[in-house]
Length: 371
Image 1: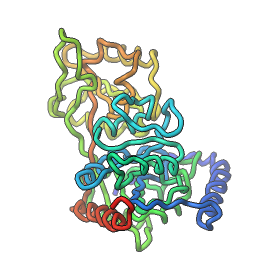
Image 2 (image 1 turned 60 degrees about the vertical axis):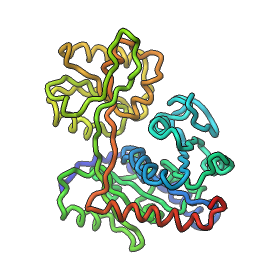
Image 3 (image 1 turned 135 degrees about the horizontal axis):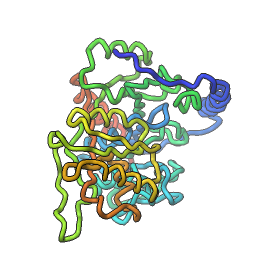
Image 4 (image 1 turned 60 degrees about the horizontal axis):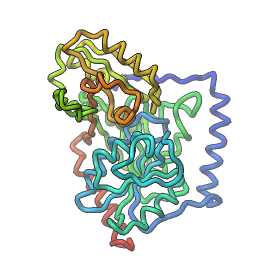
């Protein structure tokens, strides 16, 4: 296994110790029952991490939706980070990234038949979802709720990035951890995400040893799979040719402007560079709110590329914020494509992973008031 350099701001350790003391006290209050977690009579699966962003929660949530939706009425509940609304909001065909958040909107675009809600108060959000009768909610996926301990999920999946394992990280603000590494004990499943396609068998054992998991915890590994490029603005005026899906292989020789507002754009950059050497990255902060000035910068960069053989590529999450933005230039829209990401479970363990999920849902559905 390669040694990945992880930047730790050691001079911020004193602030991390203060932050850690607060977080540790809060977790102890939950452990001792002073602060109470609420259980619900329905299967609830929490997908989260110990670090701030960048572990691939949304693709893994989408994987679970695909897995479960054929047998169950699936509902997804998210915080709706950086949305411009408050309280509980149910996704509808009129929703957009501003009303429910970019990642929930991304999920809802792909799975319009599921129930999706956002709420800062997850207990309140769950109660609202359970009141729905058409269709009745049978299983709830909590997106990014590992630290939201007021809800007691029946199954918790903890994600950690292969390139930044939680065992190598430090607490905020010196590192990216939201809580101490010991917080791993609350998860029944640990998933090492973003593994390279050429990961060696010995690396699995090295990582397992370094994570130092408990006997009751199951460890899995996953990798990203990239799909064909999808037009972000497929509906153009009648006098323009409708943009079409493009295979990654078709990028050979093209000039790409890669626009991202995510934590770790480097893997995406490396994936595109496998197809073409001409990739220019415009990287913004995670969940970046694009402005007119940003779009001018994108247009300037795009215009500097050779005409007739150029594209703007972005992530699905960023596309969710671009698609309804009133300031995005019309002349750029035919050239903007999103690169879809799905996941695969490695080590031929996909069937075992899927069975873990189904076993939990089926066992707990028997006692559900909706079964």
